[in-house]
Length: 189
Image 1 (cartoon, one colour):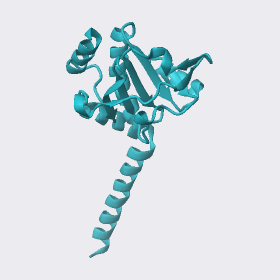
Image 2 (cartoon, helix red, strand yellow; image 1 turned 90 degrees about the horizontal axis):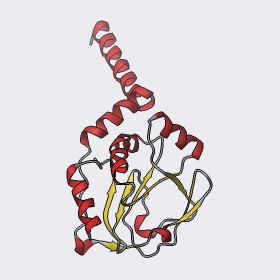
Image 3 (cartoon, helix red, strand yellow; image 1 turned 30 degrees about the horizontal axis):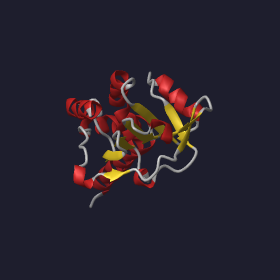
Image 4 (tube, one colour; image 1 turned 90 degrees about the vertical axis):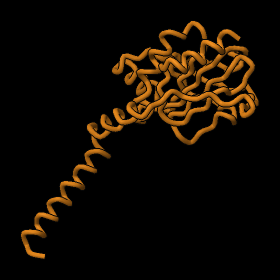
């Protein structure tokens, strides 16, 4: 290998490493990750009735940004959409616009809980910047064991009988016609 080839190879390696670093650690990289997640987001699938789990408890305490405590117990008998998310999570950010559109049309028909571990200051700043009106909560107690997840976004749809009819880990298109159809069917029951 001659000196010119070595220099070219070294330069290519440096450029490659720099591009990887930009994609992993910069706002441009976050933007690219968000856009890629939006491209691969599909309509979520509901769980077959035979595989559905019933919530073991409704004893889950949450708090909203005003400091008001809320218990899942208050929503027993209603359809509940629960999304665990964070402001630093590109897949979470990627699905937020589709959730906002769904929320805009269904907020009066069912319960929406957007649960974050971020501070309310940070979460509300994010919501404001992104022009989102989703109701943000923090967990005071642990959620029911059936909804525990070490990965976000994690979204659960609970029917009026307390069955988890959908459990989705990762990005989804929540505003799809097929998901809206599933919600409409649940609302009619």
